[in-house]
Image (cartoon, rainbow, N blue to C red; front, side, top):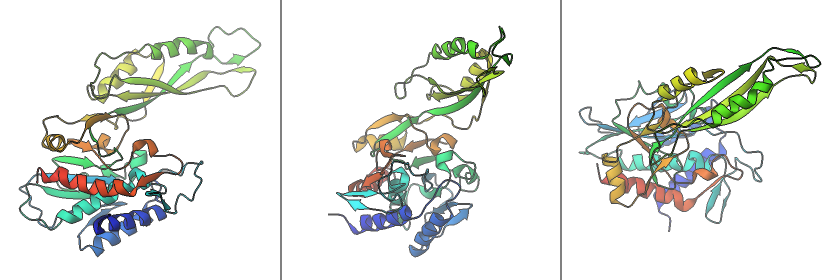
Length: 352
């Protein structure tokens, strides 16, 4: 049997699915969330397309926990066989774009927050933040409100993890590399052909090995994801462009990895951004101990979230499965949402 709270959470999830909320275009779904806060008598604040609220009896002398998930989505996968904006419920599943990533986690956290909003004498304050632009790590998402909300001691980030606790998350640097040579007509000799330099450069990337291997996340992983050169069959191009995807474990600082590539790479290379840092939390942290005490499995996550933009300890946990994210006919189980609310409550009951 599904309880009334879970039924209400599912109703809200369906409203969210019905409302397109692509990154940078989240205005309409924000209106739905504003209505939810108003209907539940919860005072909230808004900046751009981000909403947040604190518990009724917020005490500045107490530490504060952030509850956060995002309401933006990617564009629907072209292989969808159903309307991505119609929340079809079938065989215990709710189908629709954003149902799994991260609508299920978002509504679960909202109803968790509602259940503790009026609580007094808690050990912690709580801030719930419903944020934008997570899918593009945008500057107008969670990053834009970190200086506007109270100081956070640690965060719980809602993403589809099958209610397992991610205590470490890979960081990411995307590099643009460039091999330069001499342009010329293909009919003539060219001893400085940029394309012919490519095998040596690719071999250099393939042989990179970083010494520190994480028990949770494994080694730093370097992958060539794009190569582009030339515009005409009879012209040797002046350069070859390469895109390099580097996934960083929690044992390295992102600047350390950047410095290595900039100083050692045998061709020009530049990072697009150094914002997506790896993250981890101590296995002795209260929230990790709380999870362990109720049998929640801890792991290291290979996927990125807003954790990468935070400067305080955080964990990632939520209903759903990340393998369904960005997929065709995305869905989440009704029971997963119900479980999400229950597990979040049990997790926090150990510390509040």
